[in-house]
Length: 321
Image (cartoon, rainbow, N blue to C red; front, side):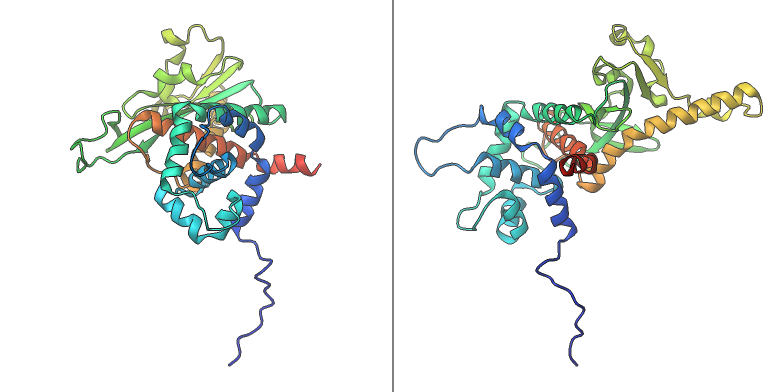
């Protein structure tokens, strides 16, 4: 029996992954990021010439988007023509190996370039009117770390910690973010051990130009803390769940307070979008390295890319216009 002709032209078909890379290729500010890195890049005087910075940066971003380790990235470059095409590798005769990929990441870590990448991306978004500065939403999420002691040192990561959430214990770190209340784009990232209380980091998550800050009930009492007294903003913190349930919504005041809580919740919802992108879209569900510094660099890169992904439609419309 002959196979039915379904009318498919596979040579022209673009997969979702190909479309994703096409879109990101257009919205990433490559020239600005490369200028940022170039001043710190080593220049080999002997031996084979190093790979182009743009090639290594593109490979680094592919790792973040698809959750690939250095070894997995090396193998994917050999196996996947789409990745080679995106990275600008015309052939497989010379492909960056895991050591080259590792060294490039260490270069970014050594010069704290991940934080500057986030600032550069946000400056680009602000120039295009996509990042406003009038309001901030703050929140935190737990990132799991390996709790096993079956390693060379025979101990868990000393910079991570365990904490109890509900009836479940978690070991790892906590990622605190400040998000633009209008666009939902991340402007500030802070990393701590998992047992650090959310409210202690609230002051570090504002950029100083906003007038209003929104937070969930875990930030109760933030306005009275010593470290935020110099910050002139209006704190809008959610009512604790038990107190909210006790409201008599049949009275005018109870109905007003309930409506106010609903409004605050709708604004706070913006902060969940970046977490969803890095955890679901990019597959980042646990730390990749030991220590807070390396994982913070990883998170800042992820949020830089999540900002671009969340704003990609508006950025593409601007390019087409």
